[in-house]
Image (tube, rainbow, N blue to C red; front, side, top):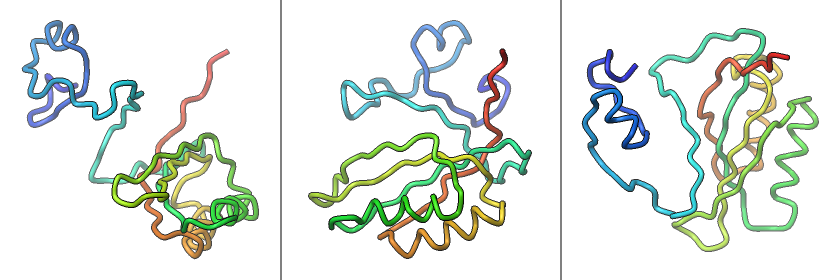
Length: 139
């Protein structure tokens, strides 16, 4: 896709660059040597709801007992099924963490909109990274 689209870029291996005849712009981009990379497609437009979607969000909470539980309770209350949650320490403030969460549903779904609005009350910051069609396992 990168070869065919002017101005596009990709993160990949040297072998991939050689295979597709791409120029390597920057090497060793990780800031932590044992990192795991998750690849995303970024667009100026939202993906339309398909009925089989996931949404990714990022949020932070106050450094106090129960702060994360308060946010998670909102997702339970609005029947939002979390499929992944990861935490990363903030590089700006000690004891502040960012939580990356994936859940079933599209940001345009009414119960998701209401749940996110309620969750924001318990967050220092909450950003919707995007909604996208989820992969369906082929058996």
